[in-house]
Each structure stands twice: as structure tokens, then as C-alpha cells.
Length: 121
Image (cartoon, rainbow, N blue to C red; front, side, top):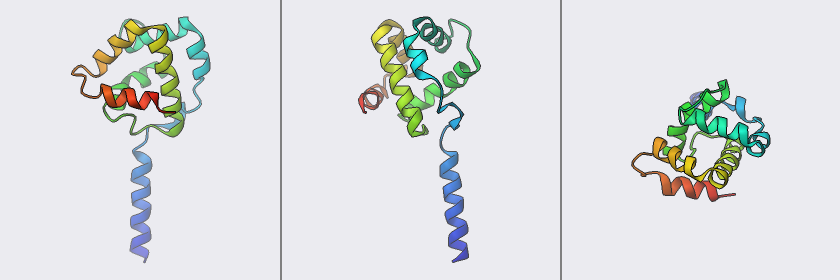
């Protein structure tokens, strides 16, 4: 029985480590999507066309994997936030959205699944 408890704790700790850091779960997404200048700044960061904030750098590092795994390591809050940001980029800056897609999924292999993820509520 003790072995089972230890094994269960190990599995839980491994699964918890499989999520992205939750320090950005409370990132102010509403300000980002409502402030076009700020949104453009993040887009330029992601496209390596401008400076990045510390948060932008962290987000940019996670983007390729998040696209590939359809946000498999995202917390529930991160999924909500990512959907909001991407929908804002798609609506306000469709050309830059296409650039981001090409940069983070050059073969288009993950696009359909990621688009489906974005449309989920």
C-alpha cells in the first residue's frame, strides 16, 4: 500500500510539472486586447520585429510547443487567456496572425487542430 501511495504522489508531481508555470495565469489579458498599441508590441515581439517584455519573451518561447501540443501544457486559465489574445490578433491584425502561424507552424501541420482549440469556449 505504501508503494502505491508513493507511486501515486510521483505520478501527480510529474503531471503537475507537465503544465506551464502558472505565474502568468493572472496576466491582464483584457488590457492587452483592448490596447492596440500594446497588442502590436506583443505581436512584434513574437515575430522578432520588436523588443519583448519579460512576459513576452516567456510567451514567445512557449508558442511553438503550445501550437504543436494544442496548448496541452496550459492551465485552464492560460487556455482562456490564449484564446482571447489570439482572437483579438485574428480580428484586429489578420496579416500578422498569418505571419505568426507561418513562424510557429511552418508546415501548417497543427493549424486545423489549433484553430479548433481557439474556437472552443
